[in-house]
Amino acid sequence: MEFFFVLLLMVVAMYFLMVRPQQRRQREHRALLDSLEVGDEVVTASGLYGMITDFDGGTVFIEISDGVEIKIRNDTIANKVVYADVDDNDAEG
Image (cartoon, rainbow, N blue to C red):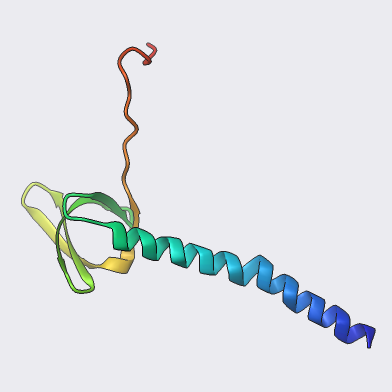
């Protein structure tokens, strides 16, 4: 009987340590993808930086250089690039 209790405890621990964090990351990534708009600067999972120019269903068109546009799946976008505002009065050096 103790063996089944320990086994059940291990399954519950695995759920809270592995499954729930992965589900949270998936929800956050889905929210990121839903918040993207044309003109946002993004970085892809492969490390390419670019600006979103258009959406077409599950694909995104990204301009990575002047006149160079690529077409990628939207789920390969890793992050939105956000630049910190630097105030000239606060900058040192």
